[in-house]
Image (cartoon, rainbow, N blue to C red; front, top):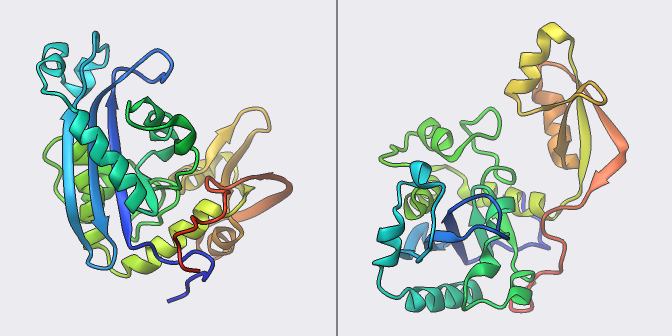
Length: 260
């Protein structure tokens, strides 16, 4: 396995998903929490839970189908939140399908110190993982279906966590896929331009490039390793802007309890 020895394979992952009443952590709230403690070595779920959290309003009810009344009728979730703290201490990484969104909400859990949240390492199953049957990054539902995993219900926290764990169970060479995702999460990204004509723009779009109306270019942010692979696989030429770079999601040194 081609694995960067600086980032050992973790023993456990915390798969996390929040359903929220809106998109802003400042003005909205978590209405449902789902979590799974996953063993990498055993390739299986160790523990899982979900709980509604009481809210006064839920403008997103048509999406998550959770009523305010149901949230307020839920028994105390303090025990679940305390368990989440234990799992955060036990797992080396927190995993979510849209980590940039979920990372904003973790400090809103009452039992968690906001400063401690900054020390957590996150992996994004949308951006960091390369799924073998996806041509480009896809929604969790599309990714699951592409890999032969059925989807019974969407927009519920634990179900989304279970879809991620099912992907971990299902794919071949999972440890290598995880190792590549970890490396990607720490690596800086370079702006990569797809050199396509207007009539070939769908080729770039299908591979996950985005249109920048300012520069009038199709672009994506990639690590050097993914740029090398893109040069081989893309049906068009690419150009890398070496002058633009952004940091990886994880920039702190590995936790002290890791054995390097």
